[in-house]
Image (cartoon, rainbow, N blue to C red; front, side, top):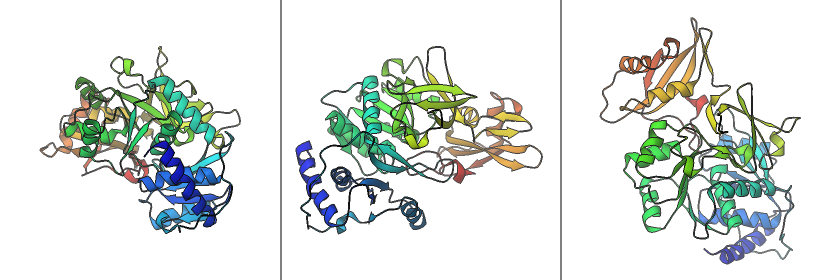
Length: 415
């Protein structure tokens, strides 16, 4: 679809929305299944001046209703196809103030209950600018989105494509063959994904050498996976962002990918960072004003450090720190050691209440199909690299780790 065709379709949809009762400033819930119809509705709602509340089709009825109630939704498009063909004859908006709210997006809920964050047109614009100054923009860019557009990871690609005037290739779900086809047959040269997606693509042997940039975010990425991808010629770069920052805060530059493996890069042009008591704080025009403290900073809840070259390393979350026998244990540190074992595909570490240790370090692992490793052997593997108090006291094997709709590890569900 060309931009002219998108504009025309969005105008027709906007007039149907107005006929359905949508008004400027109203909160409108839309189930975002990831298809072309949903992208048209995103642009149509901009023309009406309404505020979009994109909801994942994976939400339970209870979760969906809670989001609708909490956000005072005026119109609920649980099924966008129910819109009639009647078009209201009303003036539509052609521009917006940068402070106007474009959407209210549910956070991933990776560490607890999800809540909505209001993002403005200005947040989207400055986010796109920051990314452009880091990885560049080419007229022929084709950015693959196989991420949920109900989350900022996917929504930011929708918005970036129209800001840049470049192509977005949209897939309604992640499948390894779909990504392979997008690269080989559709000329995709920029891809956004989460760690799980990268692991699956590497396992399936998908050639990732053609895209000029593959951004991996949504949580920690095993260093072994990054190194393997780089050794196969993939331009894989870690990125760090939040819903509250309208996607990226930092992204590693392609030219630094090998030298700074494990880093999520330096702050983008539009972001400022500082570390306070170990916590990452963010400031800048991409940050939702609703998420700022009295001094104008966003407290991310993430633990990190900045090295001597200004590169950020994310080391976990402040509320994920495990306190065992009076010692602090970062789950990320233990997880990094676990996934070094060739038979462990994925790993997650949490603290479980323990009468002796306060919390017992507990590892939950996904093993390769041919694995025969025992829990005790997993512990012995960890003991080679970790202090005794960091070695998991309990190891559980599962088929898959619980994840949010956006692909992040769901810590609270894991506990």
